[in-house]
Image 1: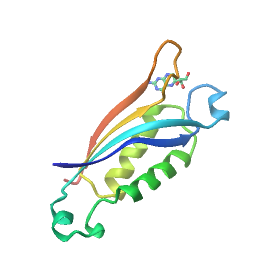
Image 2: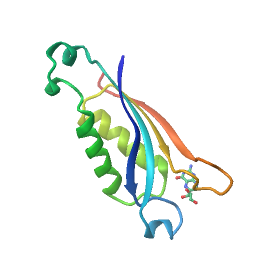
Image 3: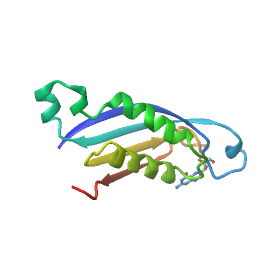
Image 4: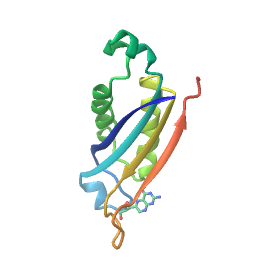
Length: 119
Ligand SMILES: Nc1nc2c(c(=O)[nH]1)N=C([C@H](O)[C@@H](O)CO)CN2
């Protein structure tokens, strides 16, 4: 399986379990790995045959802003669903980093992996 990746993707969103977090916007950083076969686009040299990582960046930033979230897990799942269904990909691994959201920890976050149900 080949991989396309977005590292350090900035996601502006309203997220968190506390009331004050639901009243502000925070910036998360995501690392996204997307499983897809790159043989066809490599042969045709045509973006139309590839998973467009620019289009994916814009779309995932929209998903992050589309609603308020309590948990990182919920946003990670929405992102996974978008990557697998809207971009017709085989596999996705997402790391969502909330930075130093907890005192005494440099970085907190979640990592999830999902496979397409159709492949
Ligand atoms: N498993 C999780 N634990 C916690 C989350 C989360 O999203 N998933 N969030 C929080 C708070 O919002 C924290 O980030 C800020 O105090 C706590 N635990």
